[in-house]
Image 1: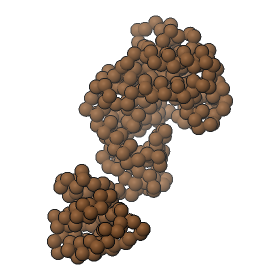
Image 2 (image 1 turned 90 degrees about the horizontal axis):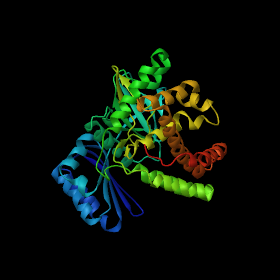
Image 3 (image 1 turned 45 degrees about the horizontal axis):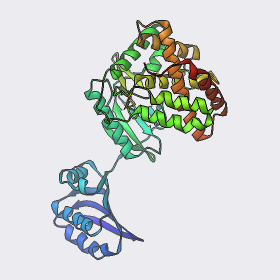
Image 4 (image 1 turned 90 degrees about the vertical axis):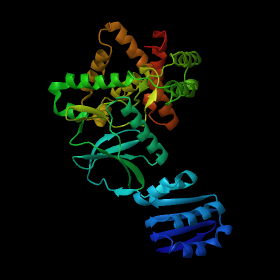
Length: 385
């Protein structure tokens, strides 16, 4: 084994390579023992370490006992498993060494608030997360995908976390799959069939209920949005908006939260959802409000916005939303569906107003959406389905 010890201010970094076993552990312990008392942080960088024995683990444990802020970084899969099986990962921070990938020249097949999805090959795709997304956020999405899968929702579970430049990514295996958006683009003759398939999956999601507190509460989040924009509206309008959202019935039904045709993959004729970081619970009206944002609200100032995001003409997107609502509420009167769309619009404008006002952008949309909420607010008695 070889090791390099570097002290920078109050941080002691120990870089290891080879095998840390009974033969090499004493030399490492002797080298670092006298320096531990003068630092506040110890980092074992094990990116080139091939193996660590119980003797090597004892050196790490002694460092932890002396300096509480001791961590292990860049562990390969084998070394990480040793730290995990021996319980070290429960006592201290132990992070993996992530495989590095490049997406240069790869096709972009989806893009959302949290990241961009690239096709690596005909068999695999990678979701590259925005810099703001932490490893904790990514692990949470993986756990949500597993939870959804257990509930019978067709979703792909990532099998590997990688680094793409400075950002994290999740790799999925989807053999020769393509987005529903691309299917629609290439086969408009079967548009109604694709929309029916799209809504069938949505209703499968909404048919599930989870325990209270098990997922993010969409009502609580939406109420925060309403309180945030309340001061931007006429007082009566702002008060009524908060009241309407507060009076939405508490509901534990599953909600995807980012449900659109670029987040659905088709593999062997079967749909899979690939973006689960927004999974939450609440009334399905929140989902329908988000869908209105995707297919309608963003385009109300500039109808080219839909074409830019989906690659599909706005007339078709209008049809997709209207047909989706008709199928979702099959058997309900036309007037009932129109009433639901008004409710969805109010929630859509509320969420978008919060985002645009906080970001201090989209002034035309802000002006329009405030006007729309003001005109709609007295046309509904409540926001329930």
